[in-house]
Every structure is written in C-alpha cells, then in structure tokens.
Length: 146
Image: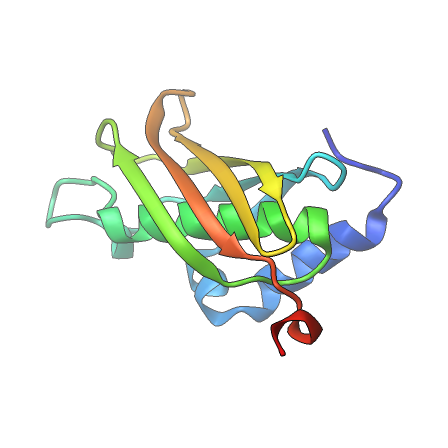
C-alpha cells in the first residue's frame, strides 16, 4: 500500500529509477511503496536483451539478480530516504521466468544504524514465485563512517 503521507519518498524513488542508467536500461517501474514499512514493488518488463539463450525466451539470471538487488536497495531507500550500498546478496532461483514481465516485492526486515536487511520475492505475470533473495546493505551515514 502506498504511503500518501510521504509523497517526497515516492518522488525520490522515481527520481532514482530515472537517473540511474542501469535502472533505466532495465526499464524498471515503481508500482507501490510504503515508507513506514520499508516496502517497494517494482516491475521489470520482458525484453529480448535479457534472454538466457537464443530462442528460449527465458530470463537470464543476471538481470533477475539485478532486479532483486535494486528492489532491496529501494525498500531501504523508501524507509531511510537515502541511497545505500549493497554488502551482501543471496538469491535462490526457483523456476524459469519465460516470456514474462517480473514483479519484485521487497520488504525491509531491519534498518539498523549500520546494516539493513531486506527480503525480496520475484514473481512472474501469473503470480508464480520465480526467485527469492535476501540483501544486506550498509546503512552507515557518511558522517558516521569517519
């Protein structure tokens, strides 16, 4: 559910999607967010550039991993209001994603002083779970690092 009390977070998320060249290449779309909960939902459209092998119409694992990582990062951006770097990422691929847009739903589990942890679920257009991930992110602010 969108958090209407923080429209600037929605704009921040949209701006970060638009300004990042890689996010732009992936053509990611913000579908939903909740700043209080630290959740985001992103959509990535199927494109032939993401094909695992000629004629398979299957997503390559690389763009799937990128989508999971970006969704995790954006969940913490929604909660903290600033960008953060990835320090760890684990992905379990559960089934092939074939000729489908993908929906990433990310939920912040912890947004601590130094580390944030996010769970991410990736589904196809039929709602079938394709992959799951857990990301660890550095939440240290620049003034804390010195």
